[in-house]
Image (cartoon, rainbow, N blue to C red; front, side, top):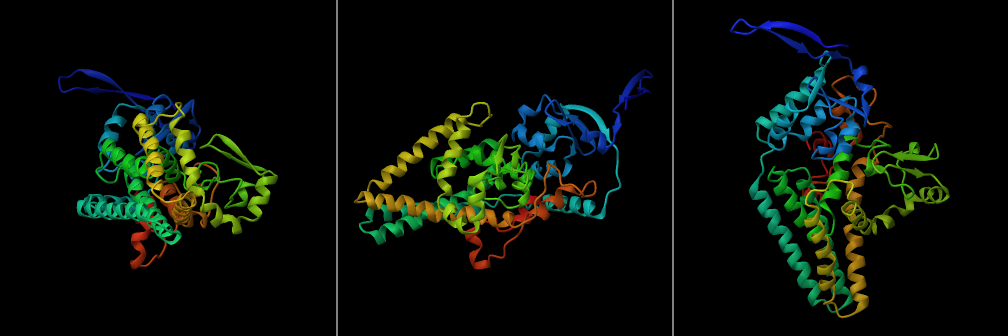
Length: 408
């Protein structure tokens, strides 16, 4: 639809021509969903992000996932006034506003969700509790100090197992702080939270914050999408829906490759119910590999890459030095293997809330009424866990995946 023009008179009586933006339908918007024509609607304003996508702080892959869609709810979920919202609003004002999305009648669910989001912001529920994070820092320091002491004083198989257990707890608990920094949820300052993430991530636990953030943000935007969500793309070892293998495999938009359902995948998936925990026991080693693959991929924009690489180098050196205090090579092997196997409980915790839930195929949650896609998608694909008040600390808040996914 071509733009409309009209003349308005200024206070000084001068007539000027104002060009109104064309009004397009949601179906028209959906045709602009490629890298060469990437349009996204936010609060009924349609932006052409084709050229700007590469500059998106969260990664251009997130915008490609949202191409041709009304991304209002996703935008507000990730850009609160306590976080990156103010900066995001400034950026929007300078982007190419090409059209206006035709209005639709808001449903009660859409209105209620917007009012709830606004109430949460008004009530200060995004405000950081510094006493909580101070307590958490003391808790992590205590675990790490205990792990170091137990390791350097271990002189038997039993004492080495105890040291490995405490060190595994440290690795698992640090992940929750790293998760908070990935959402800019501690200081709400991007650079500061990245630095905190580098400390609890690559420096102390060997996992790249940038890798985690890139993958995790994609997971939030397209939760349980067979083609788009990297958190459920684990062929050839796991498949959570027959959609991943009934056509011979699945193309991953995140990894830009096909996960083939070949003979090896068929064999492994046939026994995945037996192999799940054994594989999870060694899953952390894969995260080290994935971290390095991202940091050494210079085609992907990475914040503070050199700092992360330095931290990633420090981690194995410091871990090797710590383990070297054990009196024998067999106990060093025991410490490394057992600590990493026990830390694998983290991966089980994360999988539970999504592997058990329904999936869908594309980038958008089809079938939901206009304006309801985001909340229906997130609640349809995320499950809360009743861990019990006595066990909440062990889950780091991630047992409440429903609330976390609609208010990340």
